[in-house]
Image (cartoon, rainbow, N blue to C red; front, side):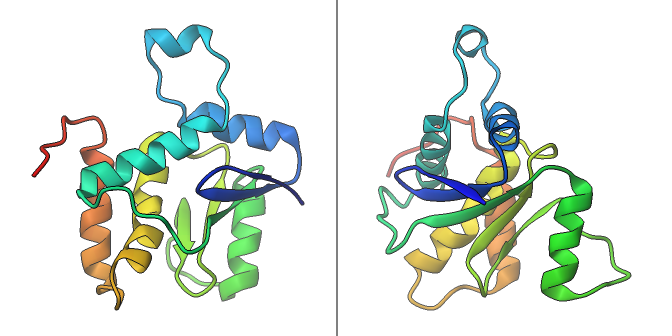
Length: 155
């Protein structure tokens, strides 16, 4: 696997097409972005926006967030089965593994909001001395996803 590093992440991928698909899908559409070629800087900008929505300032992580990209659903599901075994329950579209501290992503099925949601998990792991219950983390991750572009009130 190849990799690229940003200020806050290390992204693993098999080829540039997968990376380009990922970056394109998480780059928010706006008139200004129409003419700009998407690049990996949007990943760090999104990370900073998640921190802003959570109201935790500029938290410096002790290590970068690892992201593993997969070309399609089949490759993503194959990795899921390798990690957790087969299951009858509905599989996630992407997920953060709390043990390995890795975000696993199908590059064709990702959006800016979905990545923001997943960024919340490692941020909370780092911010709190003892990680809060997963249900609380999910509630706040969902909040981040839905308030990503809302004007953030500063306290």
